[in-house]
Amino acid sequence: MFMGEYQHSIDDKGRIIIPAKFRDQLGSTFVATRGLDNCLFIYPASEWVVLEQKLKTLPLMKADARAFTRFFFSGAIECDLDKQGRINLPQHLREYAKLEKDCMVLGVSNRVEVWSKSSWEGYYEESEQTFNEIAEKLVDFDFNF
Image (cartoon, rainbow, N blue to C red; front, side, top):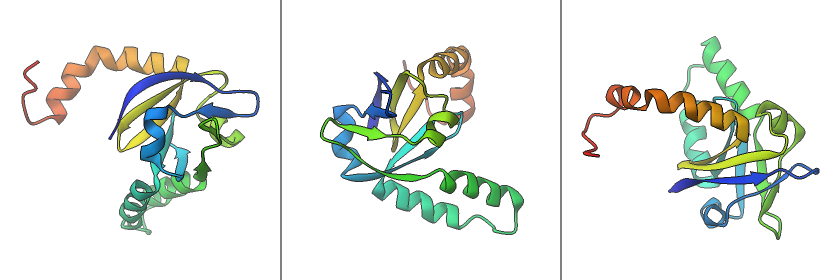
């Protein structure tokens, strides 16, 4: 399981360090693609296969299903870590997620997300305000905080 929040920077060549805690779980080859909320999703190969199977079940005759799968798969790339634990993010993914310099790398259960630092801070601030309401709508059990 991926969890945690790490601040990193993208260098001039479009490379970002993947936190050491995430590298073993990602494996030698993994997939990065456009995510939701203008961030990038990074999946280990095993999770990518599961997700791919689920998306294949979407009805081809529905425009929304075609649009989503087109968006999701057309942005996907296979990634390998270099010796310094970095991946090279292509221009189209950096532009989509507005990644310029300061970034946040998040562990989110079965995937890693990469956000621009400013986008993450805005999203976090907005979501923090409604976290309790969201939890009440989505979660069927009491956390007993």
